[in-house]
Every structure is written in structure tokens, then in C-alpha cells.
Figure 1 (tube, rainbow, N blue to C red):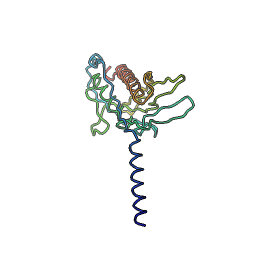
Figure 2 (cartoon, rainbow, N blue to C red):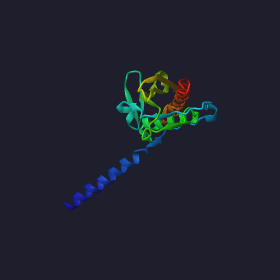
Figure 3 (cartoon, rainbow, N blue to C red):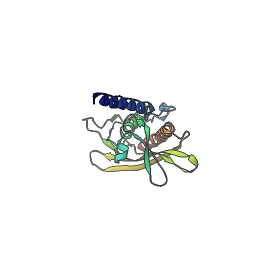
Figure 4 (cartoon, rainbow, N blue to C red):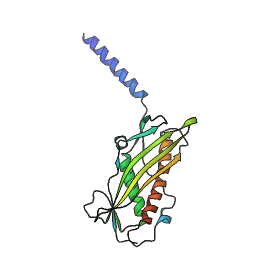
Length: 203
């Protein structure tokens, strides 16, 4: 009996070892695009107001770390061995925060966890962040997000805008999808800061 149990244990260990060797390592990616020339985007505005970025809202699938891809038949899946290094809503939160700070539109851009009371609040809802599969083996990286600029004193919505951007995926894999999504995120960030400049509260 002991010999039989020992044989089963050895066989199980060998089987586990074989399975482990066949599983590829997980690739970790982030949303951290490089600005071509961030200083050229700075606004010439002497603003005394502060802005707080509230946490980005999103549906459940966008609150995980999966890198998603969808097709034209409403099917949604994720890459098995590739992940974001944090949830997309947190990665985007940090990136948009930095992008707005670079523009110097406000005296200070306050994180959501700050106890200080801002003059204005920027709320947002992430609607889409995915690789969209198309015909003939092509695909695009997509981001769709809506922003709400709110007067913190009156609680009035001063302006709202939905931004949508796409970028072609050059390599049809997780890395190619991440590169395209990063490009689309930069485009949305540029549009966001331009929109905030148009709605400059100091004017």
C-alpha cells in the first residue's frame, strides 16, 4: 500500500511539473504613453481655482486587470497571459491627472483622496477600453469616456463631453493592443485638456 501511494505521489508531482513548464509567463503592461512635447501644451492661464478628480466609474469588466478584446458579434474576451499592472480606471486616473497638471489650467489638481475642498470637480465614466477586432485580421485600440465638469459650490454641471478615440493595432497580439490603446489614450488626454481650457472658470 505504501509503495502504491508513493508511486501515485511521484506521478502527481511529475504531472504538475509538466503542466507548470507548459504555461507561459504572464506579460504585464501599463497605460503610460510618452508625450511628444508636453511643455508645448501648457496653457497661458493664470488660474486661482483648484480641481479635484473623482474616481473614474466603469462597468465591472473594466474594473479588473484583464486586457479585453471584442468582435463585431458582441463577444468579449481577454488575453490569457497578459494583464494590466493595475485596473484601467486607476491607470487612467493617474494619467489624466498628470495631463491636466501639465497644462497648468488650475492652481492645483487635487487627487480624489484629498481632504481639501476644491472649486471644481471632474467626474468621469469609462465606457469602453478594448481592442476591437475587425475583418481581414485587422483591429483597433479604442477608448470611450465621458467627463463632467462640476461647480463644487453650486453642484451645477457646467459642461459635459464624451471623448472617443481609436488607433490601429499593428501587431495582432496583446502588446500591439496595448500600444494602440496607449496611443488612443494620449489623443483623449489632449482633447480633454483642450476642452477644459475652453471651459476655463477664470474667464
